[in-house]
Length: 86
Image 1 (cartoon, rainbow, N blue to C red):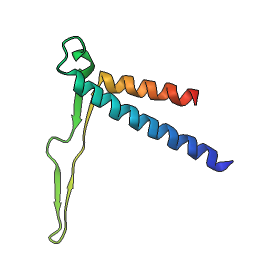
Image 2: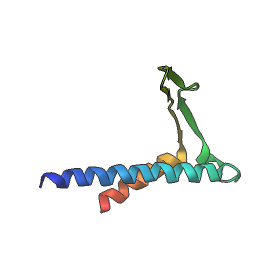
Image 3: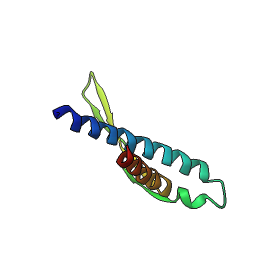
Image 4: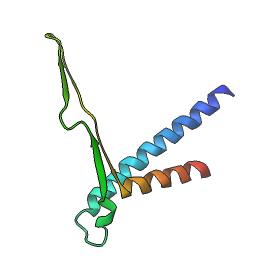
């Protein structure tokens, strides 16, 4: 019974990830359509410049940028609804 909860958590995580990706893709496609351009409205936040850690032998670059749009929020809501009905 212990594995059942983790399976559901992974299913929710994967559905949320799919909702974010598909919502972002739909928002990107809707940018050029005048009646659907509101789906692309959103905010970006994160690091503008990546952080570079140079260790001589190894160079590691850290960066994170997140863009939240109306379409990605709709995708997350739909993925939660789909998860609840599974």
